[in-house]
Amino acid sequence: MPFYVLLKARTLWHGHCCPDDYGRYQMTWFANLQLLWKILSVTLMVCAVTVGVGVVGYRGLQQTTADVDGFGRVLVLKVADTARMHQPMYEAVSDLRGAMLATDPADVQPFLEGSTAAMGETDAAFTAYQALPLSTDEKKMLSDYDTAHKAWEAAMKESMAAVVALPPLAAVDAAAPAEPAVPAVPDVP
Image (cartoon, rainbow, N blue to C red):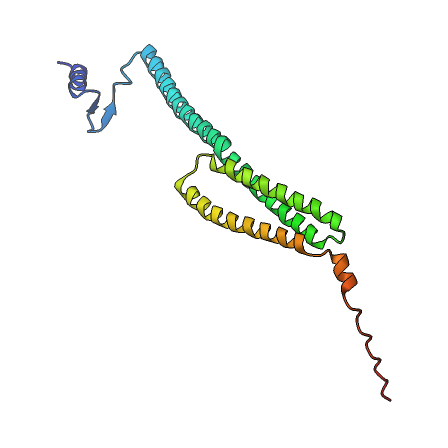
């Protein structure tokens, strides 16, 4: 029997990998294929890799889209409602300060009305924030914030009542005694 036939039989017997005459293993399955099958197998492998990369990319894109949707539907609304809560708080305090410093009694009332309106805007934004889906940590922080917010609101109402009861600054300035003249200090030679 010729050596080539024995080598071929040994290749078939051992599968696709067998030792050659020097004890090295050779990959004979690809070398024995016809050119058509080689081109077809390489093309199919490239297609399989392309499909795999496409599937991974598509899943990643879907996850990114879900993350962006969650960001846009929840987080942006939370940030906006938080800003709607805090901006009117600053306006309420500013209007209350303006009412305290007003010299004309007619100017006090518009400041107090602006402060009351700003407090209402803060409450509306807080209610809108509570309507959003919240985690347990956010719910705990909101309970702490609610306590602090109620204390702030009570202090604002108390301050507004005190401003209404105060006489205007012009009346206080008119009723203040004149400053005593400072005696001249004699020059010492």
